[in-house]
Figure 1 (tube, rainbow, N blue to C red):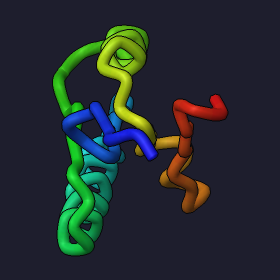
Figure 2 (cartoon, rainbow, N blue to C red):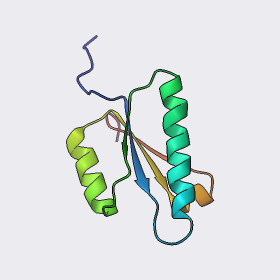
Figure 3 (cartoon, rainbow, N blue to C red):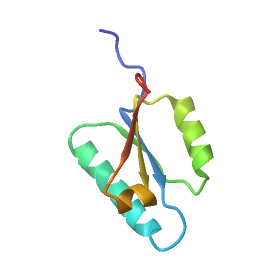
Length: 88
């Protein structure tokens, strides 16, 4: 089995959107980070004030094995989107 090359196991992309729901999205993402790190998972969080397109492009360039997207629309439905790099 090959050693992992990525410095992180999971990359969390935060998409707070506009309006009052943004704080809830950031809080949910930070809670997710805390839960994953408590289980020994190395997490990179992208909570920059940048567009979704920029964040997704950067996430693809970084190549972290698992990408989780925490956004206002998904959070409203109780969903965090997951993308596994190996299987797309």
